[in-house]
Length: 92
Image 1 (tube, rainbow, N blue to C red):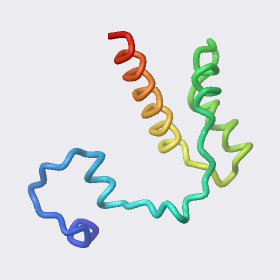
Image 2 (image 1 turned 120 degrees about the vertical axis):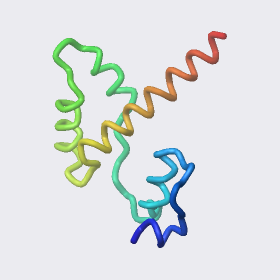
Image 3 (image 1 turned 90 degrees about the vertical axis):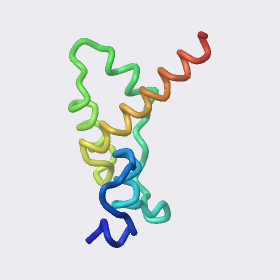
Image 4 (image 1 turned 30 degrees about the vertical axis):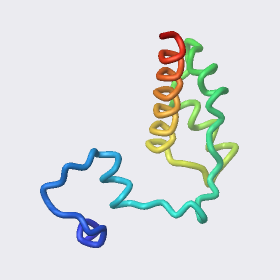
């Protein structure tokens, strides 16, 4: 039903992220969930016993209505990807 409501046809040439955005649009006006502190996460994840699961649990303790684990990981991994692309492009 979402597929038809989004006006899409099969087969589609959309990338997964674009397809997800169209099928599950986010209303920016209603999303008041706090963003993770990416700099803090980047520093903490380097520690020997740190895992994203533990860091997410800390995040949820501070923000009970924050993002769930899978989306938290997606956000952090996207941040790391953008950061590595920025570092790489400035080094070239």
